[in-house]
Image 1 (cartoon, helix red, strand yellow):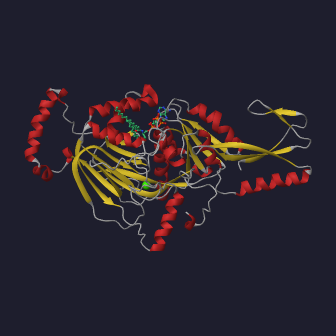
Image 2 (cartoon, rainbow, N blue to C red):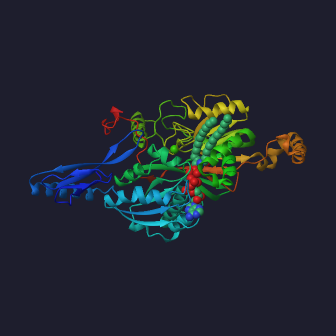
Image 3 (tube, rainbow, N blue to C red):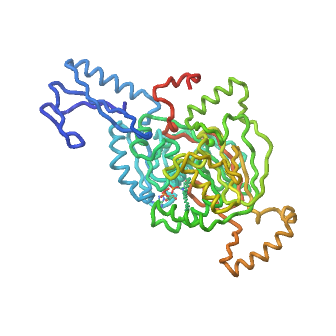
Length: 486
Ligand SMILES: CCCCCCCCCCCCC/C=C/[C@@H](O)[C@H](COP(=O)(O)O)NC(=O)CCCCCCCCCCCCCCC
Ligand SMILES: Nc1ncnc2c1ncn2[C@@H]1O[C@H](COP(=O)(O)OP(=O)(O)O)[C@@H](O)[C@H]1O
Ligand SMILES: [Ca+2]
């Protein structure tokens, strides 16, 4: 139930929102607004009118429904809304005003709305000015970049308030208590799509109104013990880093810039050398190669319950660091599936939202034809990891070092090759058309470019919470309280 509304008209008929006329019965009716599930994870606000000849009974219904709604502590009552008017197709403000604000009003939610005036406005407002105590949640109207601003502000502020040093890579960060709602109005909107199942402003608004809660893992990214950024979706070096760098110069093209740059970078076919080391996740249920997708926190909780029962759940137990050196077309860390309309199953279809791990996907140097096979599998049912040049590991922590940054002793091992390369790189500078790979790519961190290439990444389990419930893949009326039923 979203809310209950009392009919005001006394006589005849009245016009509905859609223009049609509705007959008012003899007695006043009570409209009940409720959530209706539609296709493909979409939700809509539906309406049903109840009438009763006894006005006292009627009033009793209304007041008890209102009391129950008011006493529901998971539902937000005051929200702080940030709108990026320049994200995606620049429709953020219109989307919020036309589709979302009327629903919040209907549900009795009060809002404080800030339309951002410059990049990082929302982040800095949350970091320093916002009176967070007044609110039950934050709403982000924009794309993944705008969401990234919001979490940077909120996580930073929470650490300062809790006396935790946000710069230290070893520090356990304090979880943020305010939930975040995402109204999709960006270009990719993968964080919304992967946590709600669709990019639809009304559906997102309804998840906020009913007070859903979905914990989410956050990766912290450091360079030489210096904090760089947080990431919740994709950290991508090589292909996705290059696509992002190239597409930033084509912002005027709107969301199509990614397809243009994607094609360009596919044809450019650069590979990068470096060393990846990682700490494999131990004691968790599931692997990135699981055919069955388990995305809802419910399923994650269920597997925890099962593993506790079986006695092998050790959240902190980790193995030894492992190291892989090579030439890569792409190094991707997906902390969630990264599903989006371009790839409805995402970069790592079985990634969990809230298990404290990220899926590290290494795509080694291969032919253009093979890389295309890998890319195309993101759009079909075929397994994108089932290729000899692709490997995937579920990890808690990883580091990357581009070859040119490696220590002297490492490089001495490669001395012979290195001197050859220096000669060739000079030739390449003189003849740029020779197609030799450049030394560095950049990291795409949730759609923002990182300033360093050598990074240390650590997953912080369930650091933030969203107004979402993961993608529902279970029959709606199954007994969700009984783990054995799932
Ligand atoms: C041939 C078709 C291949 C399709 C492969 C699609 C894989 C798509 C996986 C996308 C993962 C996206 C992860 C999310 C990243 C976002 O954080 C981030 C920021 O979003 P925002 O702008 O909303 O703020 N978005 C991005 O970095 C955009 C990544 C987009 C990648 C598009 C790649 C298109 C590839 C086209 C290759 C074409 C080859 C054709 C050969 C004939
Ligand atoms: N008022 C503003 N003017 C310019 N840039 C902004 C403004 N508000 C936010 N931004 C920045 O715009 C960038 C893109 O925002 P986003 O909402 O993710 O759209 P898109 O999905 O199209 O990239 C983000 O890096 C964000 O920091
Ligand atoms: Ca995860």
